[in-house]
Length: 390
Image 1 (cartoon, helix red, strand yellow):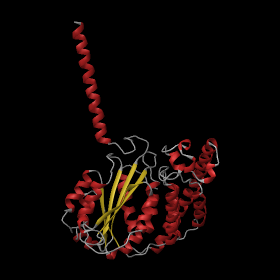
Image 2 (tube, one colour):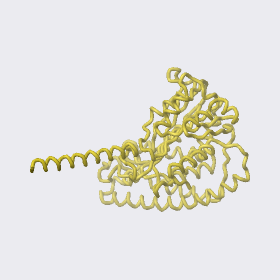
Image 3 (cartoon, rainbow, N blue to C red):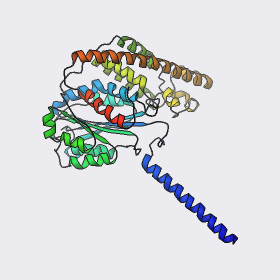
Image 4 (tube, rainbow, N blue to C red):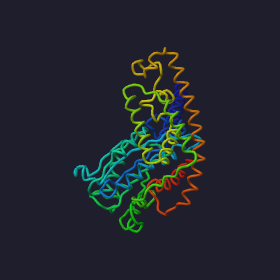
């Protein structure tokens, strides 16, 4: 009798354990596991954005629009919220249709994998040149879908934007297959046709977006991005200089990261005061992990490093002379100072945006640029995933 009771209890426990495992498996399949270990309900939502640019001969204007409007798109995404939390943002970049690339590659190249280091994205955009060629949309979408580390979490926002002007049907890889593969992974494919809407429809760009739950958009790639100088821009620029003083380069990547940040600042300023302001606003909105690979303040705040574990010789000269307690306090003070500056910039950014929107309505040309088109699609698709965009 006792043996029978023991067996019965064991079977009950075994069934309960099995049900628990099935429930856990179902949750895992529904939520997925992110590369930072967060599941549904974890600390941070995630937005992943892959930009696929046609770099054939006629696309210099498209690249210039991407350079000028990167920071506007980034700041819009970085200041969004889901369940009250700001997301981590990762951006990848591909080029295609460039005859300087090999025929065996399909005239395409992954310029950058998904990265939180957006200064690298700016650097890469300024390094693009045009030449050629044959534009294989289906193939580059397949490469981005298979070649990037996309999240398995179905709540994360995963977007591909492909921009170009030749028929979507070029090449041996059928776009209808590849866009379905993308949406099967929860990646929406948005198509941006550089030219008339009718040519985009006839060339398959509309169909590509429709099959992948994306948006079909068309732009004039040669239109200049309007630079609106707002009353807040000068103060934003001054605060941006103060913000730069809160970064502490460290380790093997410190020097290169600091140099890359400075170059991105200069590149943005070279395009006009509006782009420079948007660049500063994007930096102020960036998540703590954005520069963690080279900035000690970000690294400590995101839990990727501890001040005490960083060798003295890997620190700037002024910190090498400090003892461990002084270093800890110095980084803490810089983090607090950064937060104060970021708050001021973000307040000015809201005032600036209201002014810029009013001015752009006066100057409206009726034709979208790349950034305008992207933001239209992003606002709709982010809302569907529960993100709130400012």
